Structure formats: structure tokens, C-alpha cells
Figure (cartoon, rainbow, N blue to C red):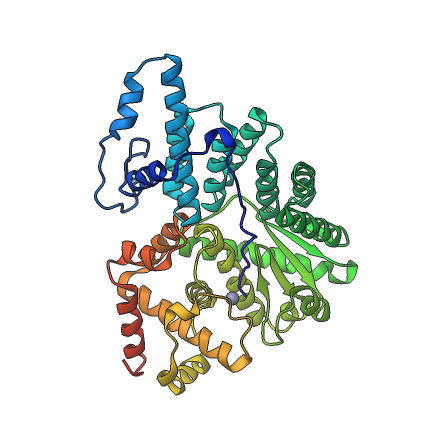
Length: 421
Ligand SMILES: [Zn+2]
């Protein structure tokens, strides 16, 4: 019930913009310290020691007028900002990366690779509207920039537009036939597109429900109708009503296992789309609604956090959204209070665990989220998701939002469950 991250996109800068390492490091420091010349008010996101002074070298170049030397100088400084942008992308600091690329863009508005940088940082923050604009612009400046095509492929995959994704991956592949990550993404997108071609589709305002055959048309209707209600209910809980549709695939149980490679204990899966077995919908109204709420919370968390929420937070929120833990989970937790895992070891998917270990991990996740909500309120937990959309560093995001050390919260959780603390 976890989602996978798409493959890392490796982007290289054009040679003319390569900067010397030491100077780039200086500028990284400038950006990390929060030089916020381009950030909007309230955009600083908890940056400590914000310093509005413009680096002296940049001031000197701005003052130097429009001579050739000054233009070269601006390009050079732009290259340094872009370089620090790439460092920040690598470090998972996407807000700051976007700011660095924005400065670079002002200085060198004709450099396509800077727009690719803006596109990456927007895509990682789930601002695909901005990503699309930046990447299309990069292609206008330099139609041969394959990285822009590869990223546009990623953007379209995320929104289920598989044919458009295939077109862009194909273009990227033709630009650089040796890039194996692009090749892999192209193959995946083609495969997914061909799989989806075998489904029938039903559209509701916020969902695209894919199903197979007239026999399941009724189930598809039921799912779409229930999901619209879930959209409102979970939307009110999170204060979030996204416009983009979520894709849902319905399968017979056997095909569901084959398509998702989930262990038998997993009821459903969210990996950017919702994958649901028909049988799970048909068991009982209560099971159906719990499952739909659970998976839809994953869709909300995925979008709000930019796909960066650790598994325990994601699953804990999904359990909370379902309508609370069952008595069964409470018992389980009581029996296993002595061997709760540190939260930091519950960041990756639970799908690889055997059933018993997975149940304990889910129970602990549920307890952690309940404690978090009890201590700080739901709005703050929602704030944590937003914080995660601009950084993939959970510890940092946690401490920025709650002003409590992640480790200390972990200890508090263990002692709240009567475990050894
Ligand atoms: Zn789940």
C-alpha cells in the first residue's frame, strides 16, 4: 500500500555553463543561508538566519553595465547559481533549488538547462503546472535538450497521460540512446499504455475508473460513486480538494496480485494510481469504504507531500482516515510494545514484510499518527506534509514544523505504548 518513486532523473548542464567547484560551493552556502532575493514573503519556510544581502560578486556584476565583460560575468554567475540549484536538487531541497534556478534564469534567460532545473524542482514539489511551463520553454530555447523531454514524460506519467509520456520518452531516447534510465521509463510507459488500452473506462468528476468487461461495470459505478463521497470526506479532513483526477484500476483478485506483485495480506495498492481487486469491493459495504478511504488518503498524502512522506506517516494517516484503529490493532500493539521499531526504520514500504511484521508496523504507524495529532493537532500534521513537499529530509521537516526532535518524539511514542523507553 505504498507508492514507488520514479527513477531519479540525472540532468547535466551544458558545457558553457560549467562552473568552478570552489565558487559553486561559496554560492551553495549563500543559498543555504537563505539569500532570499527572489523568494516571496512567507516563502522562506523556516530558513534560519535569513540574510537579504546580495552576494558582493553579484552586486559588482550588476553594476558593471552592459559591456561584453558584464554579459560574460552575468552568464558566469548564472552558471554558479544553476550549479548550486543542482546541488540542492540532489540534497532534496526543492524550494531552495527553485529559488537558485530563478536567480540563474534572471541572469541568463536564454539558457535552456536552467529551465530544465526549474522544471525538475517544480516536478519534485508536485507543481506540475509550473514544471510543464518551464520544460516547454526549455524545449523552445533548445529543441535538442533531451532532459526536458524525459521530465515531461515523468510529468505525463504522473497524470496518467501515458501516450503523451511515451511520445516524450521516445524523443528523449532518440536524443540520447545510451541513457538507460530513459530507456527503462520508455518501456514502462509503453507497457502501461498497452495495459490500459485493454480496460474500459468510466469517468466521474475526480476519478477515472478503469475496469474490464461488462461484468464489472456495476462495480466500477459503485466505486466511482463511493469515491466521490470519499473525496469530500477526506478532502474536508485534509482541507484539500485537488482538481486533477486520480486513476483507479479494478481487477479480478488473481490479476490484481499479478499486476501489483503484492503479498496476500495487502488489500489494495496505491502507486500513483489506485489498484483495487473487485473482490475487496464486493465483500461488505464497510470493508469497501475502509479500503477506498485508506487508498484515497494515500493519493492525498502523495500529492501534498510530493511523494516524500515516510511509510509510517502515510500508513498512519490512511488508517486514521479509514476511521480509526480496530480493537485488534490495539491488542497487537500491547503484545508487541517491547519490540516497537524506531520510526526511522519505518520509512520504506511495508510490502516486503511477512504478514505478522507488517501488522505490527501498521499498528505502530497508526499509534504514531494518533499521538502526533493528539499532541499537535491535525492542522500541524497537514503542515508537515506540505513541508515534506519541499524537502525529502523527514527529520528536518519534522523539526521545522513541530520544534521537537524527531528522536524525542520516537521515544515518547515508545513510552506511550508502555514499551521500554
Ligand atoms: Zn496503505
